[in-house]
Length: 410
Image 1 (cartoon, rainbow, N blue to C red):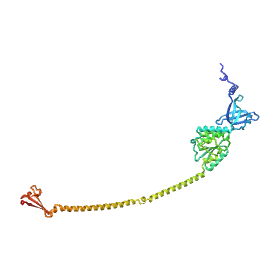
Image 2: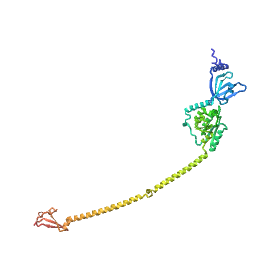
Image 3: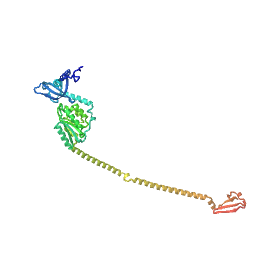
Image 4: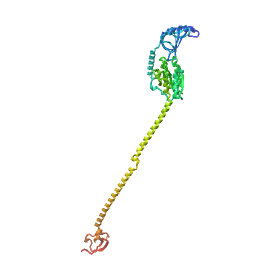
């Protein structure tokens, strides 16, 4: 059984068969509107057909277009490389060469208003995604060792940045990447240079610089691919595009926006003379502040030393010592007076006791008569009955005692 044509090596399709079938399939597609940027425009002499390469600004993709020559020549806006256009055409496959192209029947150049509207829509999109968030901005190093510079070859922006930066800090180094800064090839070259510099560990900051220009000239710097690449960089990026009124989207994504390339050099590289003057001024101010602080503290110490408690620290003790001496003298005097008073009182009491005592009575001629019992214990004689005749008596007088025998009572 014979297999269907084209499904086995024994029964292949001829080239014309495949080409005719592909052309038939593509011919069934309807006409479409396509937007892009003219990357190449070819008008051959004595040819009624113009050949255009239409590029997608946001991707590395392109389409081949063919159109009548008059459509390009008589266009209301001059068609050149880099012009943003919208075309209306039908897909076509040329069987003779086996190529695909879009047969264009209408071309419209994108006006400034439409370009600005699209940039505004892209700006809102990137803002919604957070690419403009100030918290994502990376700090610019104070003194970069190597500055990556992306700019046009032999451009005024390169000259201004290098001249101003080296004038402010002669030791600064540059890693320059010269690229196309306008037209259809600008974005891919700038993106490649940006990735190259971001991967270089010696580069501390990257400057994207270009002089002024029209809105169309600055379109690459509002490209979505470039903006996202800047946001993805790990190295700080400075945008110095155009002049003060120019504000492409890369200014909003970059970590620092400079008004001009010269301003970028001033904001990245410190001025040697100014920094030295600042250091000198800070040293002078710090020395003056230190001297003032020392003088103030010395004055405070002098005031503290002049106070009586520190000028004569023993004065309070001396004053208290005098009080203690006076108190001790008064106490001693009072004690002596009290002792004298008590001594007089004791003397008076002694005299009275002596006067009233038995020894004094005996001295006046009295005697104490005691009976001596057989037990030997004497007892004071109170009655004559206590001393019958023959009783032994002990008579005590002032200078001693005598013993007597009672002869009875009278």
